[in-house]
Image (cartoon, rainbow, N blue to C red; front, side, top):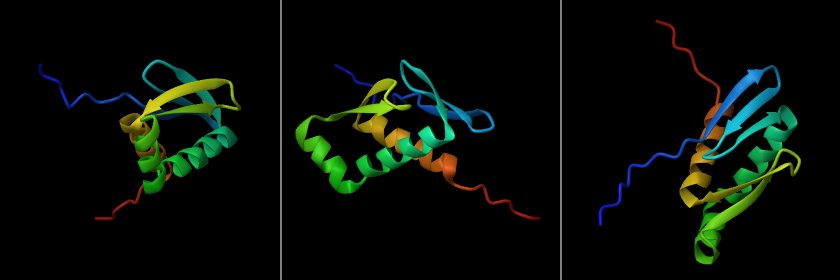
Amino acid sequence: MNVDANVEQSIRLEEITFCKYQLTTVNKNILLTFPQLLQLRANINKLGTHDAVCDIIDSDNFVLLFVADKQHLIYLDIPQLLSLKATIDSFFTPVKSVLI
């Protein structure tokens, strides 16, 4: 049996308008305000630490996470959790321009 290890999860975060964002996961599109996005970032940063990931792997191998003031519940396995953490981190990282 062959398993394709290069399957990429489609988790995207994009700005729709000023202070309105859309989080696209595997099977949901979630509209977020800026405070909701900050709360999601705080939750993901807690779950994305080395110790927290090790605890998740030792127990269930997945996380159920409430998003957007508990309006949505998303199921994330470890690769999806790390992908969401990387997506949110890259969204808040400033782009450095280079002058030539």
